[in-house]
Image 1 (cartoon, rainbow, N blue to C red):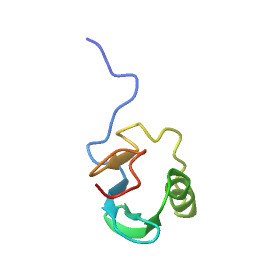
Image 2: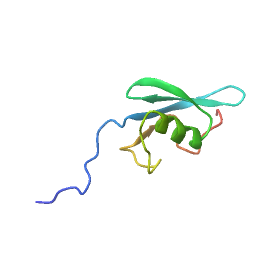
Image 3: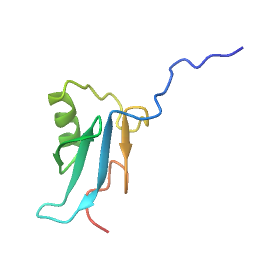
Image 4: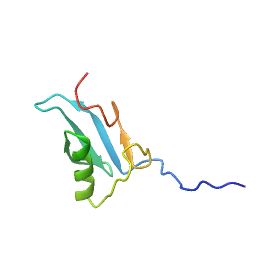
Length: 78
């Protein structure tokens, strides 16, 4: 029998929602299903997570962050 080296939770604690129009455009960030802040960049995502006591080591890890409406490089409305 094989075991996964690292179990993956089905729901990451952090969710970054689609880009919203604004000056500058922003994405709402949720932690544990509650609004945690407005992010305008990947750096903001890391700062908001850290302020909530969460260290994100890999923004591409689906067990850490769920990106809705575009990935970590999407910061402008379509």
